[in-house]
Length: 106
Image (tube, rainbow, N blue to C red; front, side, top):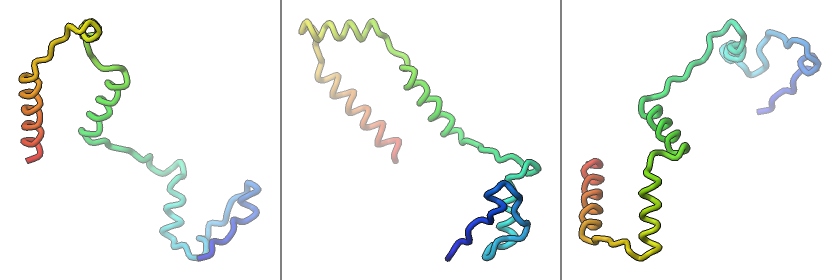
């Protein structure tokens, strides 16, 4: 489909004719005119989930909440070699997390 070039009047700032372009219906011309000031403004409605995700993203960008002193304490314990990890507790918490994840999917 060949699209006709715009008229020279439009390029020079003149007004285009009100007749629809060849191949365009009157409905298409009406939609093109919808951008006039007398047309109603468009609106966007976000879902509750979208709003919640936006809030979470903002929290992540700002750094979230964490205890900086505790982080430094753990870093120091790792450097000193004094950090002890209870493997049974870690395994239990990993399994509990996986179980929760699978229950949510079902």
